[in-house]
Figure 1: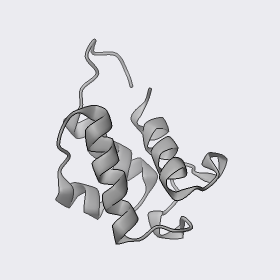
Figure 2: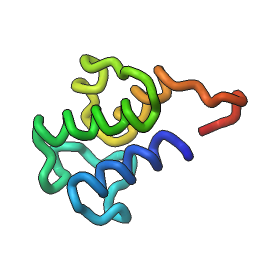
Figure 3: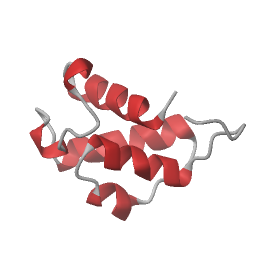
Figure 4: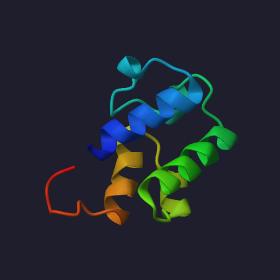
Length: 84
């Protein structure tokens, strides 16, 4: 699963929003229910799902779903070198 798809799926599930409305360029602050508490919930869920710690500061600086997915890409390489 690609990072952008994973991020969209997790955000949709945890915030109970429609995943179809979560394009990569959607600003996080425009997502219904997005706040600092839910941002931490997403971070912790992704860390558990991926089995690795993510850079909190980089994650916190992300302003769009695509930027959040890029944080994942920085920390998690595809095991076979394939595109995520």
